[in-house]
Image (cartoon, rainbow, N blue to C red; front, side, top):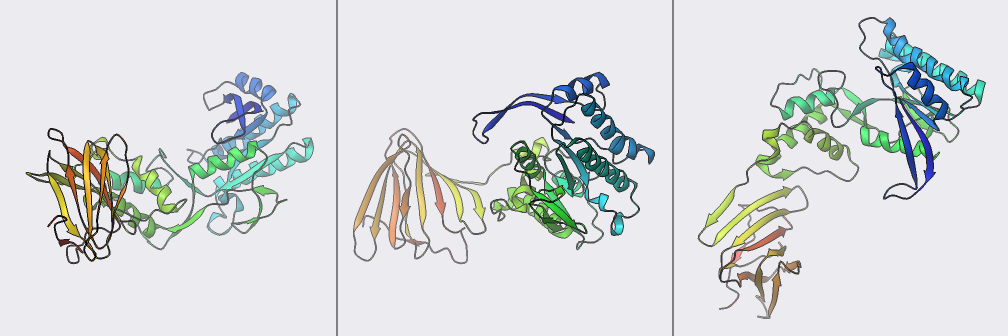
Length: 384
């Protein structure tokens, strides 16, 4: 449980308020602490719960008993601050959840909250969370995503009985964002149609509106592509706010130390080196080019491919010649004033290290990954 005090107007990079104190109460805390916190707090986030007890009776002690103690102490201090509780979709007792003691204990906790609100007039925020995922979630416990991330990252076997099994998943970052909205009174309300949340401004329940329905097969396929990225250099498509983006962030938190750093293939010759950094499905290829002092690289052109050359260390002369008109354009660039220079289609181009002593380092981006069977690269010197 977290209790917050002194929620004030303020300014930071993301919020228009600040919180001066946070009171944390856990299973090892004393009842005196809970008594003190409930007297002073301005809002309560009750995240307490029991989901794998030795005895079924412990479901009710953790999911109902603690909530009872909490609300009684709030009433004792005449504190009618808002109270949030984390319930579960299992509390619907629908379908495969019908005989769940965990669900029954969560439902009892919900009803306790609503009765408390009627009695005291306090605002209650009852969330029924689906499966949560995110960094640091314990594997081999109650999260298939955590187990898959951990095992695939660490080269351990996984078991999928039915790839078509669908999960409703909620990313921990989205949950935290919703709880922050509670502090501003901007939480999302709903009613439930079975196990599905239906947005409703005056709904009895509250919910996080950005859950994802994903099959086990889709999760495993994504994780396997993440695992292969260091060898393929191919970054899967990860649109903003997508499930893939959130799953990738989660997967990375399970990487063992020896996989956090990985080698890249450097193509080295007497002129310097060229190293591919990253390939993408639809946003091209990133590379780094090192040219030794006085060296000229390039001397080729492309029909449709285009590139950016970005010098990040030392000085260079970039030359481009229109192969049709013969027009030559030049750019002197350096790492002291970083610029991006287009390599135009139909222009043969080069890059010359102007230093007599230092290596030239250039970051390069091409609009497509290199294809050996269709390189779209034709040798032609800029200066005949």
